[in-house]
Length: 168
Length: 168
DNA sequence: CCAATATATCTCAGCGCTAAGGAATCTCCG
DNA sequence: CGGAGATTCCTTAGCGCTGAGATATATTGG
Image 1 (cartoon, chains in turn blue, brown, yellow, purple):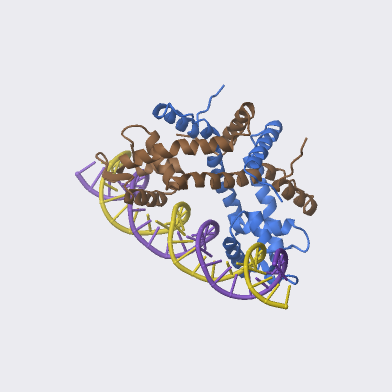
Image 2 (cartoon, protein in one colour):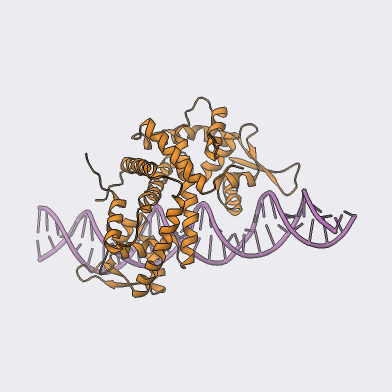
């Protein structure tokens, strides 16, 4: 039994010495979650970079791509999927439009709104990047066997539910 | 059995329709991880704000506090704990020093280095914020029972190990 | 039908971080 | 010892995001 000690074990141990009156066990979860998220981000970033993308651009292109023909959504829908502010979406779209990966046209039904559509280049790029991205994700998860993965996903679902991550 | 459908379920389903040739199951994990991390960050942010803190400042103060007397570390050590660049730490310390929460003094043994030390105000602030922060973390984890939490932590450990998160 | 309110998008200043690089100092080895 | 390379911290330009607010349009209640 190779009792690996990680960063969070050390942190918890330090708090135990300095503030024995507090129960810091929630850090065992939240601390590792935060750390893992950072490391995963760094890993994914490399894959994106190989396709001249960053997370923000990949996110928008992938959202449009998986929405199906005609690969067209409004900025508001993209904003909700991405969990960022409207300003962030405006700027992401500026960048993607400048690169010719999406187009913005006025909406026919609502003159406040616009239709963001994947161009052929955008479509080709996301379809090229996606398999590589999935391979990276699979590699990250490689040491987690099937039943443990299922339990992990179930726990993630629970926590997302607690935080009100409902899709309607 | 209330088969809750969440955002990631929808995403996976969309990909299944658009790219049935690809196995997008890794997204079940990574997608939820990323989403959860964002929601947790937003939740913690509120707690920090109640104490005139943000994550960056809390992180530095907490690292110094749990290191024990004399609550003193070098910028390099803080950088490693925080997983950010040296520039980020310099700027965090500028802000904390300006607020009188830490001091920077030359190191006695290495003239390239400095000693960052918690002031009384910094000590008092972090000891005040910490219980509130832990309460927020506990609330987030409230719907996860003990055995599932343990399994969740074990999986997090595995993934951190895969990504090379070793503490030496 | 109009006024009040809500919605959709964009603009922009400010923030914290990264990446790159500079200056001072330390360490190691020939 | 002395020079080469490593280490430590800092500076700064640039990046993407937020938060606040502006504009235009849509919707709703009286």
